[in-house]
Length: 136
Image (cartoon, rainbow, N blue to C red; front, side):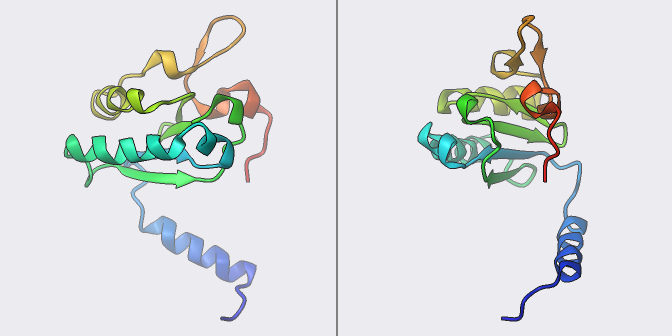
């Protein structure tokens, strides 16, 4: 197989992105080793099962990704396109996330990051751990 140039890779990336609906909900589950040690694979399997049970399999995408970096708070689940970030997610939390966030468009407050002042932070990019990082 021939090596891809940067331009070829960027072209392929754009082709893939053009086929995706940017407004379609997507549940991203961290599958890095830290989150796997905290049972993220079971969480991901629970999302597949619950989304099928709710009849949402044609409306919601599920992706297992590499490390999100904030391992101590894993498993980490990010709901796109809003970038809602839930931390320390367990299998018992999945039905609530699906019914509240994906169906009713409400937050599961107890799974959000809480800063030193007690304020809940909804979006991944606003969490202090991520705020000054340039994600690549």
